Length: 195
Image (cartoon, rainbow, N blue to C red; front, side, top):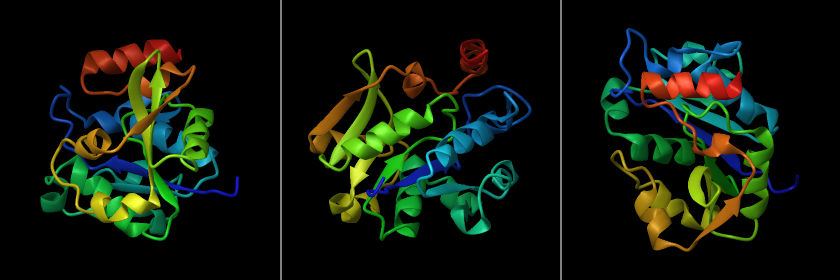
Protein backbone atom coordinates (compact mmCIF):
# COMPACT_ATOMS: atom_id res chain seq x y z
CA UNK A 1 0.00 0.00 0.00
CA UNK A 2 1.56 3.31 -1.12
CA UNK A 3 -0.80 5.49 0.93
CA UNK A 4 0.21 4.84 4.53
CA UNK A 5 -1.83 6.72 7.12
CA UNK A 6 -0.83 6.32 10.76
CA UNK A 7 -3.06 4.39 13.14
CA UNK A 8 -3.55 6.37 16.36
CA UNK A 9 -4.65 4.24 19.32
CA UNK A 10 -5.94 6.42 22.18
CA UNK A 11 -5.57 4.38 25.38
CA UNK A 12 -5.24 6.89 28.22
CA UNK A 13 -8.81 7.11 29.55
CA UNK A 14 -9.77 6.18 33.09
CA UNK A 15 -12.27 3.54 31.99
CA UNK A 16 -14.50 4.68 34.85
CA UNK A 17 -17.58 2.73 33.71
CA UNK A 18 -15.73 -0.56 34.02
CA UNK A 19 -16.21 -2.19 37.43
CA UNK A 20 -13.22 -4.20 38.54
CA UNK A 21 -9.89 -4.03 40.31
CA UNK A 22 -7.97 -3.60 37.03
CA UNK A 23 -8.34 -1.09 34.23
CA UNK A 24 -10.52 -2.36 31.36
CA UNK A 25 -7.54 -2.26 28.98
CA UNK A 26 -5.59 -4.61 31.30
CA UNK A 27 -8.28 -7.31 31.20
CA UNK A 28 -7.13 -10.64 29.76
CA UNK A 29 -8.36 -11.14 26.21
CA UNK A 30 -7.27 -14.06 24.08
CA UNK A 31 -3.53 -14.48 24.42
CA UNK A 32 -2.97 -10.88 25.54
CA UNK A 33 -5.02 -8.06 27.07
CA UNK A 34 -7.79 -5.90 25.61
CA UNK A 35 -5.27 -3.20 24.68
CA UNK A 36 -2.63 -5.71 23.60
CA UNK A 37 -5.05 -7.39 21.18
CA UNK A 38 -6.16 -4.04 19.75
CA UNK A 39 -2.56 -3.00 19.14
CA UNK A 40 -1.65 -6.41 17.69
CA UNK A 41 -4.51 -6.08 15.15
CA UNK A 42 -3.23 -2.61 14.22
CA UNK A 43 0.38 -3.79 13.87
CA UNK A 44 -0.72 -6.64 11.57
CA UNK A 45 -1.80 -4.06 8.97
CA UNK A 46 1.87 -3.05 8.59
CA UNK A 47 0.79 0.60 8.74
CA UNK A 48 2.58 2.93 11.17
CA UNK A 49 1.05 2.80 14.67
CA UNK A 50 1.28 5.20 17.62
CA UNK A 51 -0.34 4.48 20.99
CA UNK A 52 -1.19 7.29 23.40
CA UNK A 53 -1.42 5.90 26.92
CA UNK A 54 -0.39 6.33 30.56
CA UNK A 55 2.64 5.09 32.46
CA UNK A 56 0.44 2.53 34.23
CA UNK A 57 -0.67 0.96 30.93
CA UNK A 58 2.49 1.38 28.87
CA UNK A 59 3.69 -2.17 29.64
CA UNK A 60 0.63 -3.60 27.85
CA UNK A 61 1.94 -2.47 24.46
CA UNK A 62 5.70 -2.63 24.97
CA UNK A 63 5.94 -6.09 23.39
CA UNK A 64 4.17 -4.93 20.22
CA UNK A 65 5.75 -1.52 19.56
CA UNK A 66 9.05 0.31 19.79
CA UNK A 67 9.31 2.89 22.57
CA UNK A 68 9.22 5.70 19.99
CA UNK A 69 5.72 4.57 18.99
CA UNK A 70 4.32 4.85 22.53
CA UNK A 71 3.40 8.31 23.84
CA UNK A 72 2.99 8.40 27.62
CA UNK A 73 0.70 11.13 28.96
CA UNK A 74 0.98 12.62 32.43
CA UNK A 75 -2.05 11.97 34.70
CA UNK A 76 -3.16 15.58 34.17
CA UNK A 77 -2.99 15.28 30.38
CA UNK A 78 -4.71 11.88 30.42
CA UNK A 79 -7.58 13.46 32.38
CA UNK A 80 -8.12 15.92 29.53
CA UNK A 81 -10.10 13.28 27.64
CA UNK A 82 -10.19 11.28 24.43
CA UNK A 83 -9.96 14.40 22.26
CA UNK A 84 -6.64 15.35 23.84
CA UNK A 85 -5.29 11.81 23.37
CA UNK A 86 -6.24 11.84 19.68
CA UNK A 87 -4.73 15.31 19.19
CA UNK A 88 -1.51 14.18 20.89
CA UNK A 89 -1.17 11.09 18.70
CA UNK A 90 -1.81 13.07 15.53
CA UNK A 91 0.63 15.84 16.47
CA UNK A 92 3.26 13.14 17.17
CA UNK A 93 2.85 11.95 13.56
CA UNK A 94 2.24 15.33 11.94
CA UNK A 95 3.85 14.32 8.64
CA UNK A 96 1.48 11.42 7.99
CA UNK A 97 -0.81 11.54 4.93
CA UNK A 98 -3.74 10.83 7.24
CA UNK A 99 -4.69 9.12 10.50
CA UNK A 100 -6.95 6.25 11.53
CA UNK A 101 -8.30 6.54 15.06
CA UNK A 102 -8.77 3.12 16.68
CA UNK A 103 -9.69 3.22 20.40
CA UNK A 104 -7.64 0.90 22.58
CA UNK A 105 -10.72 -0.96 23.81
CA UNK A 106 -11.67 -2.44 20.41
CA UNK A 107 -9.74 -5.74 20.17
CA UNK A 108 -11.96 -7.37 17.53
CA UNK A 109 -11.50 -4.91 14.66
CA UNK A 110 -9.95 -6.96 11.86
CA UNK A 111 -6.72 -5.80 10.21
CA UNK A 112 -8.52 -6.04 6.84
CA UNK A 113 -11.13 -3.55 8.09
CA UNK A 114 -8.44 -1.10 9.16
CA UNK A 115 -6.79 -1.40 5.74
CA UNK A 116 -10.13 -0.88 3.98
CA UNK A 117 -10.64 2.41 5.85
CA UNK A 118 -7.06 3.42 4.99
CA UNK A 119 -7.71 2.76 1.28
CA UNK A 120 -10.99 4.73 1.31
CA UNK A 121 -9.20 7.64 2.99
CA UNK A 122 -7.29 8.24 -0.23
CA UNK A 123 -10.58 9.50 -1.76
CA UNK A 124 -12.32 11.17 1.21
CA UNK A 125 -11.50 13.64 4.00
CA UNK A 126 -13.28 11.55 6.67
CA UNK A 127 -14.08 7.82 6.51
CA UNK A 128 -16.01 5.91 9.18
CA UNK A 129 -16.06 2.12 9.37
CA UNK A 130 -19.61 0.87 9.68
CA UNK A 131 -21.42 -2.43 10.04
CA UNK A 132 -25.06 -2.87 9.07
CA UNK A 133 -25.40 0.88 8.76
CA UNK A 134 -24.07 1.68 12.25
CA UNK A 135 -20.93 3.77 12.50
CA UNK A 136 -17.95 2.45 14.40
CA UNK A 137 -14.14 2.54 14.29
CA UNK A 138 -11.62 3.10 12.96
CA UNK A 139 -12.38 6.59 11.73
CA UNK A 140 -9.98 7.95 9.14
CA UNK A 141 -9.01 11.62 8.73
CA UNK A 142 -7.10 13.10 5.80
CA UNK A 143 -4.04 15.30 6.35
CA UNK A 144 -6.01 18.39 5.31
CA UNK A 145 -7.80 18.26 8.69
CA UNK A 146 -4.57 18.35 10.73
CA UNK A 147 -5.01 21.87 12.08
CA UNK A 148 -8.45 21.01 13.45
CA UNK A 149 -7.51 17.57 14.74
CA UNK A 150 -4.68 18.84 16.93
CA UNK A 151 -7.15 21.16 18.69
CA UNK A 152 -9.47 18.35 19.82
CA UNK A 153 -10.29 18.36 23.54
CA UNK A 154 -12.65 16.66 25.96
CA UNK A 155 -14.29 13.27 25.99
CA UNK A 156 -16.32 13.50 22.83
CA UNK A 157 -13.24 12.89 20.72
CA UNK A 158 -13.71 13.87 17.09
CA UNK A 159 -17.54 13.75 16.95
CA UNK A 160 -17.94 17.44 16.14
CA UNK A 161 -15.41 17.19 13.35
CA UNK A 162 -17.20 14.16 11.89
CA UNK A 163 -20.49 16.08 12.05
CA UNK A 164 -18.98 19.14 10.33
CA UNK A 165 -17.40 17.32 7.38
CA UNK A 166 -19.17 14.85 5.09
CA UNK A 167 -18.02 11.52 6.49
CA UNK A 168 -17.94 8.61 4.08
CA UNK A 169 -19.43 5.52 5.70
CA UNK A 170 -17.58 2.37 4.68
CA UNK A 171 -19.78 -0.71 5.08
CA UNK A 172 -17.74 -3.68 6.35
CA UNK A 173 -18.65 -7.26 7.14
CA UNK A 174 -16.96 -6.91 10.53
CA UNK A 175 -19.07 -6.57 13.68
CA UNK A 176 -15.82 -5.83 15.54
CA UNK A 177 -15.92 -2.24 14.27
CA UNK A 178 -18.85 -1.65 16.66
CA UNK A 179 -17.64 -3.60 19.70
CA UNK A 180 -15.80 -1.81 22.48
CA UNK A 181 -15.32 -2.44 26.18
CA UNK A 182 -17.01 0.04 28.50
CA UNK A 183 -18.40 -2.35 31.10
CA UNK A 184 -17.67 -5.85 32.38
CA UNK A 185 -20.72 -7.14 30.48
CA UNK A 186 -19.25 -5.63 27.27
CA UNK A 187 -16.07 -7.59 27.96
CA UNK A 188 -17.98 -10.83 28.39
CA UNK A 189 -19.85 -10.19 25.13
CA UNK A 190 -16.56 -9.62 23.28
CA UNK A 191 -15.04 -12.77 24.77
CA UNK A 192 -18.05 -14.81 23.62
CA UNK A 193 -17.91 -13.21 20.17
CA UNK A 194 -14.21 -13.94 19.75
CA UNK A 195 -14.42 -17.43 21.24
